[in-house]
Structure formats: C-alpha cells, structure tokens
Image (cartoon, rainbow, N blue to C red; front, side):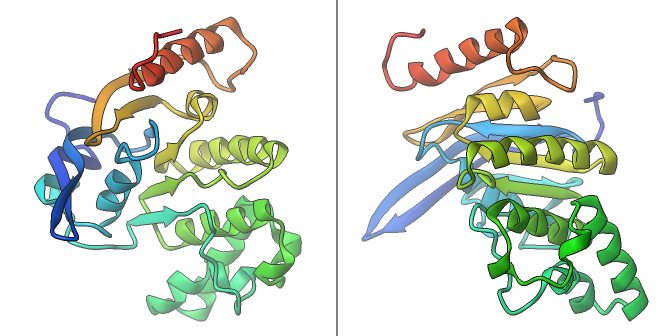
Length: 259
C-alpha cells in the first residue's frame, strides 16, 4: 500500500474484552491490520484465536473495547451495507426464492422495481443461478445456497465482503468449485474480501495475503504476501512450500515442534 494511502479497512491496536459471569474474557488483543481496496486477505488460526471476533468488529456487529476500527478512515459504529457478511450457515430467508433473497437489500433500500430486477439479474448471472431464480432455499444444494448468500451481499452494494468459514460445511468437491468461482467473482468485481478459514490450503489458494493469528488472547502473529501466480496449482512445489511454512507457524502455537 502506498505510503499515506487510506486503506479501505484499518484496525489500530484493536481489542475486544467480554464480561462473562463477572469475569473479563479477552478475545482479541492489540490487532493492527491495514487492508487495501480489492485485496483478498485470509485469516487463519486455531479455534479461539479471535478470527471471528475480528471479522465481526469489521462488520460492525461488535464494538472494539480498545483501539480503533475504521473504514476509509472513518470509525465503524455499526453494521452497514458497505460491509457484507457471509456465514457458514448461509442465513437465507426460507420464505423467499433465490431472486427475492438476492433482491432483498435493494428492495429494502427503496430501489425501483426496474433497478431491483436489473441488479438481481446481474448477480444471479454472476453466480451462475439463472435456472434457479424461482427456487426456494430448501430446494437448493449447500453450494447453491452459498452462491445465493454471496450474490445477496454483492447486490446490496457491498465494498467489503466478510466471509466466516463460508465453505466449511460443504463437501470437498463443492468447496473446490466454489473457491474457483469466488476467485473469479473477486477478480471480475474488484471487491475487497476478508475470509476466515481453518484450512491452510484454502488460504494459500485464495489470498493475496495470509494473516496468521494465535490464541490466548487472540492476536495477529504474522502476515505473509502470497506471491504465487493465478490460477494457483495446489500440487506445485511453490504451493507446497507455502503450505509447509504456514503449517509450521500454526503448529508452533500449540507448543509442537515445527514441521
């Protein structure tokens, strides 16, 4: 990032402490992160390392108890359409079909019927669901539901897409296909993506930059710029070098010898 350029998202020494049964639980400590527009950043780390807390603070669902969380240099004070969240459990409205799920945001913001139609058509096509526009969520596969969830965020004019293990519940083949499709959508739209995953391979395949977090309390340990050309070959020696490096980083957090 150019010196002095304002990042789309910035955390400055951000922390989060919860109160539980009269005890203070520190979930995240001293997180500093700068994300530039159109960057794809993956957060990896063991359970309890604050990945989801960091993501929810970026979304505005949680307020920092220390430090600052900024979008375009302005404090994030709550949820907003510019920051869209995609969850593992899809979060679709079961009473709405694919078209109406995707059009929900534009409709609730008072767009005209023609604008809603144009927007939903564009994003239905982007995620390849033209033949399923009138289908309801219970009739869709897990992969299709996740496509709808992504399209719904994009249709709501999101500048940043925050993804909390969105492919974690899918079978391996569907997961790989959606990884490919997400990279294609990201490259076509210029979106900024912050993506939480437990999978080292998924992080290397997707990210411009991988942020490694460690628990107790959650903190950012290291960041790595992934310099592999796209599309990435998971069988290449270079990919496996990254896999070994990041695996050793994560294993060291558990007190095991790096391998």
